[in-house]
Amino acid sequence: MDILNISSKENTNLKILRKIKHDNKYLKDNNLFIVDDYLTFLEFIKNTKQTNINYKILKIFTHSLELAEFIKNNVKDYHLDKDFKIYIIKKEILKDILKVDNIKVAALFKYNIKQNFISFENMEFNKNKLNFVIVLDNIENPGNLGTIFRNSLAFNFYDIALVNLKTYVYNTLTFRASKGSLFYLNLYFINDYPSFLDFIYKSINNISLIKNKVAFILAQNDKNSLNINQFNLISEFVKKYNLIFVVFGNEESGINNSLKKIIKDNFEYINIRIDINIDSINVACANAIFNFVFSNI
Image (cartoon, rainbow, N blue to C red; front, side, top):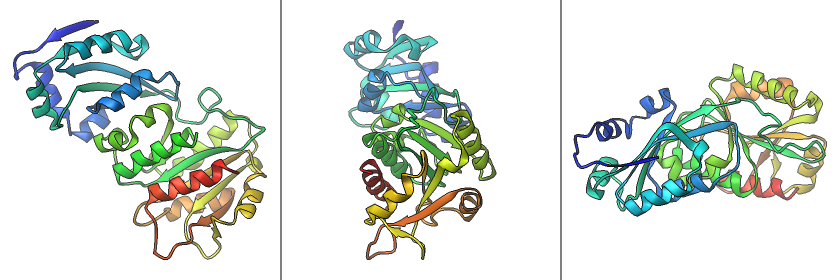
């Protein structure tokens, strides 16, 4: 594992870092992302949980030889690309490139989705208890996305299906909100609504679960919605099933009608609302409330 010094701003590696740092399209198209938050990076290197996504570190940039040695001694070999290198550069240069105050590290990652469906290998599935999967439909705000990741980990919900997502999962703002929690989660990417049904059936077939043991909860205000305070009714519903998908919709428009039709035409479901005196509540806040309720059923 090489530790190299960079003295010139014109170094090729720095030029590449500067070019791609906020180019989410390029990063997404090439399965790349940059972590420039030190606490997030620490969360990654201490994590030993295997998920459906494989992460590799390609390069690390830091201004501290001490930190470079720490990384060298603590990062796991299976998280390193075969050509991995650590580069030491001046703090002022690193700060200028990333536009982050008090920056300690910038790490370039590549990821690979090993399985884009629920499996025993990744999910802590138990047919003798309730199992929950969070479904996020058309989420736009990276801060909301990162907060939901953090909420999910806090309540031990490790599986999240991302449907028609409108932001990049590995956005800098998502990382800052999630504080590294997404590295512990199984993330399933469904790019359009017709593919959602395929994802569900492939998942339940893979875990040998019959359809009538699967149900959905739609987090939405509807004339037939149960109040989230109606614990007995909610508990009575969910305990009939082994696998529950809890669906949260777009910040402005809620759950897409196409997704609702797929669910209502194929599965048992209930609507649950949070009874409040305003039109709606932030989706990440709603997710935290729902997580608390379901973790106590």
